[in-house]
Image (cartoon, rainbow, N blue to C red):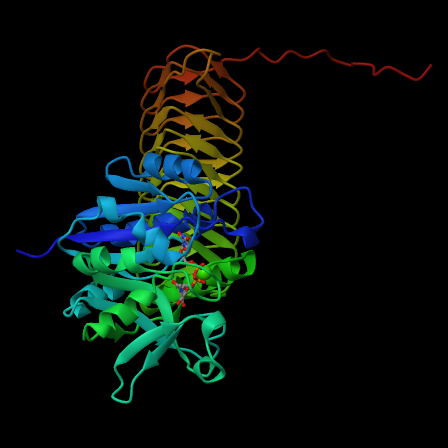
Amino acid sequence: MTSPLSVIILAAGKGTRMQSAKPKVLQTLAGKSLLSHVLDTCHQLTVDETIIVHGFGGEQVKSEITNQYAQSSITWIAQTEQLGTGHAVQVTLADLPKEGQSLILYGDVPLVSCQTLAALKSANTNGMSMLTLTVDNPFGLGRIKRDQAGNIEAIVEQKDASADEQLIQEINSGIYCVDNALLHKYLPKLSNDNAQQEYYLTDIVKMAVAEDINIIAIEPEHTFEIEGVNNRQQLASLERTWQGKLVADLQEAGVQFADPTRVDIRGTLRAGQDVFVDVGVVFEGDCVLGDNVYIEAGCVIKNANIGNACYIKPYCVIDRAEIGDGVDIGPFAHLRPDTILSNNSKVGNFVEIKKSTVGHGSKVNHLSYIGDATIGTDVNVGAGTITCNYDGVNKSQTIIEDNAFIGSNSSLVAPVKIGDTATVAAGSVITEDVDAHALAFGRARQTQKNNFQRPTKK
Ligand code: UD1
Ligand code: CA
C-alpha cells in the first residue's frame, strides 16, 4: 500500500505589494487564479487530502475556489495571524494524518509542474525532500547550507545570514515533501527566536539533520516553477515566461506564430501542423485547431474547436463554437456559444451567430444576425438578413432548409421555416412558413408616380 499523500498549500499572506482589494492568490495568470494553477497541478497527482491555509481575504478565497472546485473536497484552515511559514503548517496539524507524507506548496508560486512534484515525492525516501535551485541572484531567499560532504545542514534566511552565508547561491524554493510523522514531531518545537521573529518552517531542516536524516534536494526542470508572485511586475513577468513556454511547445508541434511575444494562451491550446497565428490573437479556455488553420490578427478564440484548413480573418470573436473543415470566417465575425459551422461554410464580416447550425457549404456573408436557427446545406443567406428570434419574452427557432436562398435585408420572424430550395425576395419580412421551391415576397409592391416634381426651395 502506498502511503497517503496530503498537499498543504500556504495561502495566508496578504500580498500587500499587489496593491489590490483582491487576495493575492486570486490574482490571475494566464486567465486563471494563482491558487487554481496550484490546485490543477495537484489534481494531476493522486492526492488524498488537500489543505489550504488561508488568512487575508480568506472568505473570498474560499468561496471562489469552492465554487470552482465543487467536485473536490478541500480542507480549509484559517491562520488568523501570519506568524510565519512554520506557524502556517503548524495550524494544519490537527487535520493532518499521522501517517503518510505531505507536499508543502505556496499558493503564490503557481507554475510548479506535476512532474517536479512527482519527482519530489519519489525523492522523499528518508523523511524529507526539498526543491532547491542555484541562482545568480539569491538575494532575499533562504540559503541552503551544506556540510563538507555536500549534505544539507540547514536553511538560513536572508535576514539571519552571515556575510559568508549570503554568498551561497543555492536557494530554498520553499517547496518540500515531508513525512507527516516528522511534521507532527518538529512543528510544535519551532521557536521564533530569529531576525524576523517568525516561526520558520525552514527550521525543521536542522531538526531532521540532528536526527541524522539525510535530506534529499532536487531541482525543478524550469526556474519559473519556483518563482513566486509578490507584485504586479513579477506577475507580468511570470505571465510572459509562461506564455513563452506555451508558445515554444506549440512551435515544436508545428505552429507558426507571426510574433511569439504577441499571442496569449489563457488555458490550453492544441493545434495541428502548419497552423499560422498572427499577432494579437488571444486563446481562452480549451481550444483545438486542426491542421493548416490560418488565424489573422486580433482574434479572440475561446473554448472553440476549429477543424482543418479554416481561415479566420482579422478581429473575430469566437466563443464556444464548433467549426468544421475548410470554413472561412470574418473579418469581424462574432460566433457565440453553441454555434456549429459545418464543413466549407462561410461566415463573413459583421455577422453574429448564436445557438445555430450552418450547414455544409452554406454562406452568411455580410451583416447578419442568426440566432436559434438551423440552416441546411448550400443555403445562401443574403446581406443584412436577421432571424427575429425574440418576441420580448420567448426565443423561437428559424429553420432554413437545403438550397434555400434568402434575399438581402430580410427579416425571418421566428418560429418560421423556409423550405428546401425556396427563395425569399430581398427586403421581405417573413412571418409564415415558405414551401419548398416557392418564392415568397413579404414586402410592399413597388409603385411609381411618373413625372414627379421634386419640391423647390421657397
Ligand atoms: C520562504 C522561506 C525561504 C524561501 C522562500 C521562497 C521560510 C522561513 N522561508 O521565505 O527560505 O527561500 O520562502 O519563496 O519559510 N505564508 C502563510 N502564513 C505565514 C507566512 C507565510 O501562509 O504566516 C505563506 C505566504 O502566503 C506565501 C508563503 O507562505 O505564499 C511564503 O511566505 P513568504 O513570506 O513569501 O516567504 P518567506 O518567509 O519570505
Ligand atoms: Ca514570497
